[in-house]
Length: 82
Length: 82
Image 1 (tube, rainbow over the protein chains, first blue to last red):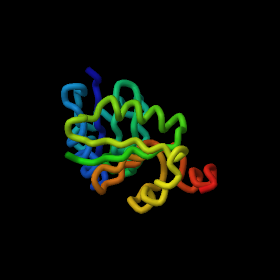
Image 2: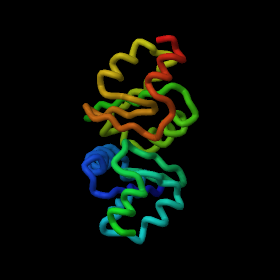
Image 3: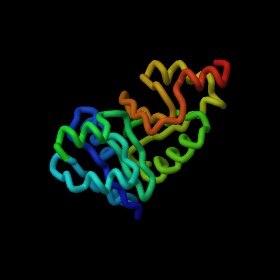
Image 4: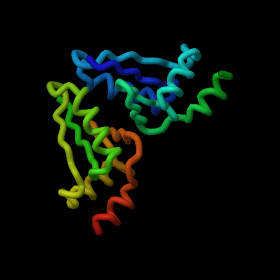
């Protein structure tokens, strides 16, 4: 099973993308974790290391899919003082 | 069942995103069509109307998810003389 992490920051673009993604992925094929940086600042480093440049983003195995554009990681960090 | 169209133009970013998407979507929930503009120039107008600004993009029902960035629709059109 593939492992995926959907990183977001609660922005409207993020939430709307999250709903669609949750709707259409095959939960038997994908072990999907949702990470909201507002509740998990400590995951920011891991996301950046994986190549996440903006949110929302879906990291599947080692591949980053940036989905639309809600905010840059720089903006996420500065809004969270992270 | 949701209807989705994955629009792309054969670029490496497109192909790599397509593989992941095909891999993880639930085919029982999503009726997914793949459109390669190189083979279907006549679908460009429909994609633009749906809000597609760049490829690859996944349109689910009426929502456009731009996934990473392969090329702008302007570049797609000029490379296809469309």
